[in-house]
Image (tube, rainbow, N blue to C red; front, side, top):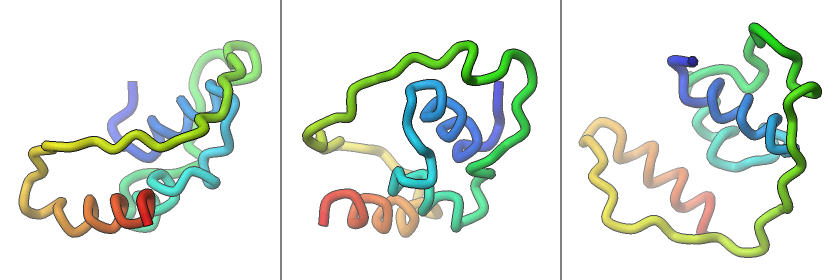
Length: 84
């Protein structure tokens, strides 16, 4: 269980067969100090539990998010990075 969103997303991206620093929202959130793209892994090595997922061929927009005021600038940059 992790407490930093970038670290958690990075590990799960690796488990799914993706490269975390090539995923825009993870790299951008990392630049805001929300965790490490290369966190310390405790337990089984990722290569022992990873499953290759197919790369998505289109982006699905998430609408009607309730984002706290302090996180809105970060969310806006992530959204713009993903959809522009």
